[in-house]
Length: 397
Image (cartoon, rainbow, N blue to C red; front, top):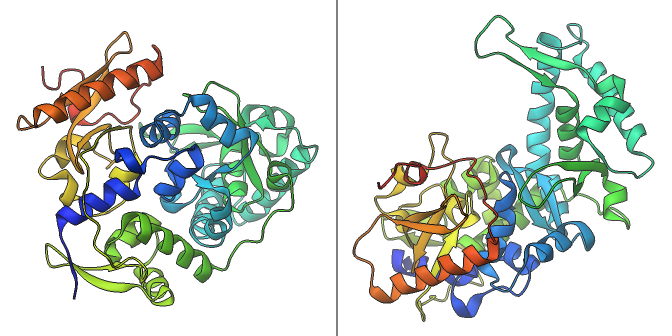
């Protein structure tokens, strides 16, 4: 059985994720394909993940792909997380990861409507169906609307769910955004243009048919969809274990094993003795041929792509993730995380290195990359939604 060392895994990571100098992407679309899809929970991370992989890219270039050519599509899917997918991958997602999450979300929403919201016991499903029909009727004119506008125009979806009103952890939440999330997971509505600047999240909503402009593609079957996602993941992230894939997909190990079998994936061994998998057309060794550095944003796909991340995190994991497991910013040298980056009050990018033993050439390259990111952001501060311990204001001071 072929052994894939940690060194080779780091080399693969740099090349496949468009992080080495000669593997850089030429567009936002290529940057997204390099990592299968982009995490979009934190709005600026989409643009910053593209910037890290395509140096000449501007924020306007990413906006164009998202909202003009619509070659990149926002879709909530794996682990109920919002991602940006290449347009051609969306039918696979609709039929697999999104469908799985949609069923869970619908059941939870119906229960919340009955327990905490306006629906009587046993009537949550009917209440939700009525609200969905009203929202779709509102959006049928093709004019994108924010969730606030939909609440104002669609009384059927304008209520609130007041969770545990007698408890300190309770709270009020509008129903309309959850109805829109459900319709999006069901591939009926789509996130349209952003009503705010690129570094904020103020989505507008329209029907999927209106957003796709031409005929909406048919969702793949669950089995076909998972096979396509696993195939692309293996190319970008492989070798990976069944646990890695099940975590990334937010799916079952059975679905992962079925996809691996359908693809004819080949079993290999990792340095720690774990069994892992590569695509059958990707068995040749990958060797690091050039040094590289990178500054990656919050929740970047490269950091979040595996369940077991020791081969690139080393001992730094506790400093790089918040209590919920969200990754903060990261600083990379040759496939290893060596620190984090933050911005000072003026927007200047600062490096906080977690290692002292970094070669002078790498330090110089990191400093140059920090200056490049500072210039690209041009004074705009991107506030950390999920700051890691190493990013906290007093960390390292």
